[in-house]
Image 1: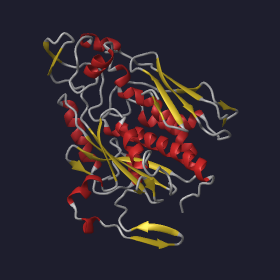
Image 2: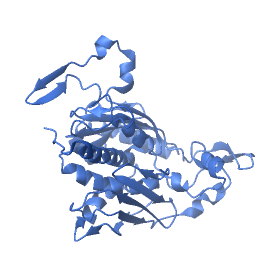
Image 3: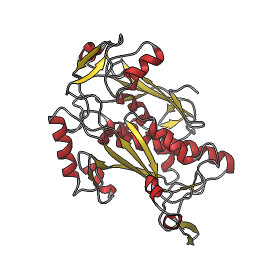
Image 4: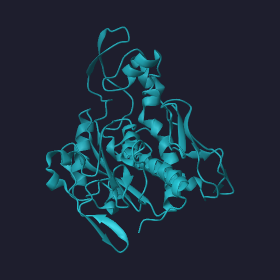
Length: 361
């Protein structure tokens, strides 16, 4: 499968560049007869769109989605669903001076090495703007998952060295950085604003939590649920690390310390600590699924940086254009979308294997 497509039964293919005419996605494999409206897709796109606040890029894009196919009289047909999002505030001229120069930390260099030809306008396909198609597709996946009682939420649990002390999903949409800790959010916002004013950027960590996922998602060897989640989350630009459950913390423990006793009550199995993040042996347990992603500071900053031209000549550049001083607030809905796409695909695969999906209690 080409690198622009994702999934086995619930498949998505995204297209478009940051400063091109439009972006979009084709979703194939969505079951027929599911109610679906533009409003439901738009709600998720509005959470990801640029220009939301002073801690995101000032680029103003409405990200208004159009459904081109696959939906008739408000219900899915079972045929490919094509979604289009037009670019309204593109500014390719801001990148003219970077036509033959590689921005440090970006995919400019690797696209050139791989293809010998690249779209220098904001990174083209490597831009975070590409994720609009993922979020649109994720909205469809979320609608499918909701029929089985699956809920997904992501929040910024760390920016720089400032960390959230609690995860209250009700607080996430009430602050600019989507932090699940209302008391810590102001410190995170101040840190992002300080970096922005200095022409710099800052990284962080986003945590994704899933409730209601049924047991049995994932394959025993290849196609493990945690492996597919890691691949999906690592495919988001700017993500440099993924952990499931306790993740890297388990590396410093003894086996006795990391033990997670299993119990049974009210017709369901439980682990005491859920150290595996709802996944054991690559298969979901029916408990809450927990993933965290490490996000690097935005590479496009206003400060001077040393690089080279395509001919290898040393130069110093200052990146113009409009960029997020911190990627975390807008990556949160993208991470939710990618998790939703993985779960929807695995849910359809499980239904094909066992016939009936039992909702998690």
